[in-house]
Length: 85
Image (cartoon, rainbow, N blue to C red; front, top):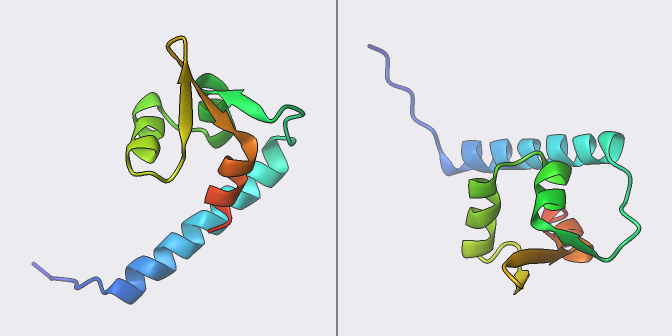
């Protein structure tokens, strides 16, 4: 059984590659929304992620959400900033 060691540099390279792929998908598949606030369901569709992934982004502090009447809302500008990190 061969053992491969993954370095921090490997992980950083993978992260940058993944972010570039996501940016490319967002640029080609979804136009910029014309409203400044998006519901959680719209964010999930925009980023092609699950409810759990969106919750993890919120918990980790990577994406700030505002809960109003049981529904989370997210600023589009915050989503753009998160993707451009």
